[in-house]
Image (cartoon, rainbow, N blue to C red):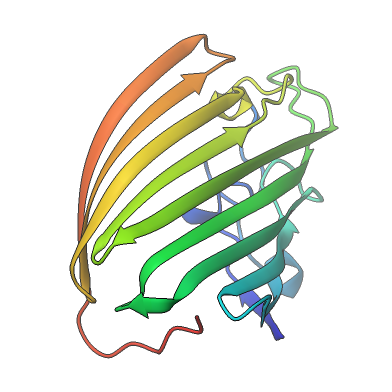
Length: 218
């Protein structure tokens, strides 16, 4: 079982739900400075993995992130989630193929939004949740087909883009020229329910790694 706790700066664009200078849920930032340990962002995680059968392995995890946000002097945010990764690989596999994986995660957010008199917004608690699930099939050496679905609910009191309920479906195909590189083609069907709009997008991704890397657990 793996356990860890990270302590980091709660200020910046990469921690949007915590201390940042941008408006969130229609509220202007009141306080963004980090002055002491109470203003830091704490990220605990616990995970464990075990073999279900000779051909199946599963990993279960839970994580969270909590710290202050910038909508008030005493407002906090809590993000929490559960995740699972399951893999089947044939005992007759050659070079790691064929295999099937299923990865899924559910996350929630509890956001304490401070009062903003200028925007006529009260002091309130906003809750959101979202999830994704992805299945990948390594059907032939170096080739993997995948299908991913994402969903996030809308917060009816939010007036920015985070308030829109939306879901996305993403089929993709990946080719691995080597262990250290991959080329992926992906299509996204994105339905933004609260904004009554649908978006279509296509991505081509190329990734490569340099240097040594740790061995895979499974």
